[in-house]
Amino acid sequence: MSALRVRGLGVDLGGAAILRDLDLDARAGALVGLLGPNGAGKSTLLRALCRLIPIRSGEIAWDGRPLARMSARERATRLAFLPQGQTLHWPISVRRLVELGRLPRLGPLGRIGAADEVAVAAAMAAADVAHLAERAATSLSGGERARALLARALAVEAPALLADEPTASLDPHHAVAIMETLRRIAREGRLVLAVTHDLGLAQRFCDRIILIDEGRIVADGAPDAALTPERLRAVYRVDPAVLTGWTPARQDQPRPL
Image 1 (cartoon, one colour):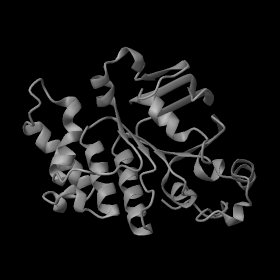
Image 2: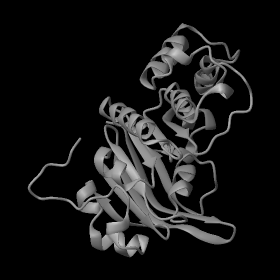
Image 3: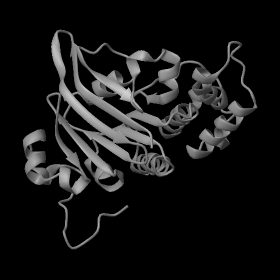
Image 4: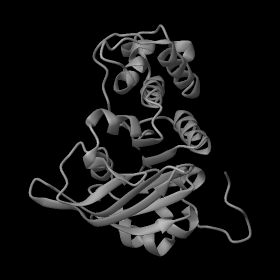
């Protein structure tokens, strides 16, 4: 089974240490939530995993092979990245937008072939945007845009998806739909790492929670084990009772899926 391995990862930005000697192992088949306060290093971790920013120390490997030894194109076929807060400026169709996800897999002429069309159709179906295929991407609502951009990332057919706040600014209905899609993708055999600030969604949908604070992992485990009142109070510096969506774990009931 495909696996991500990170050892001793250190990242500096603007002269400040953002990630500090971070270790991480994750395997395909799981939806892993990355949680923590603003500035903890969550987004920096995803960008470092994709080699979009330089690292100060450490090694990142996929299936035992260091990413540093891969070409940019090869890395892009292993780890698909869904950035946060993307704005669409060009009125291309949703289908064309999703086709852009195939770029790392296209040949020298860059032409979409039959296999690419199948991948694009599957990605649009998975993200529930097939009915929007001919719509201009700039005309989409916030929820539709989020799903279209997710489809573009899925079209890569990478074994790992790194999603940075995929539910940000979405209403509850669309946020739940995105999380359901991410969990289904993980169940189908991909590794999904998703940054989120929504403790309730993370507790409900994630198989595993990695809690980051000041550039270090402070908790790693099942949601109810990682998101304890004591740990949330220490990391978020507030009374857990005021954290929207989070509920204390109950020992007499199974965690809802």
